[in-house]
Length: 94
Image (cartoon, rainbow, N blue to C red; front, side, top):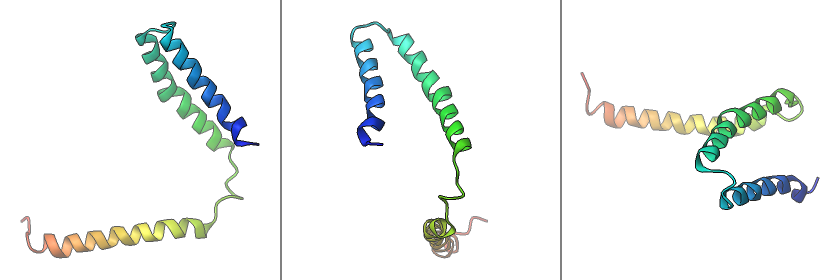
């Protein structure tokens, strides 16, 4: 599947919305209602559906998660310990 076939529907929907707003076919309250529908209902439902259909057993590896989360946890630990030893010990709150 080429990148054009993936992006083209998004571009067409954006252009359709732009021309509807410019020609005043949709007024501001209708645009606000469509935005709320899109962001609060359509996108979460689509993401939930796609996550339910996804096959993670082939795509997720433990080394991939470890290579991301171990450095994050190390940075968090260093920040917490440096805050505790350099700030909390100098200014005890109680």
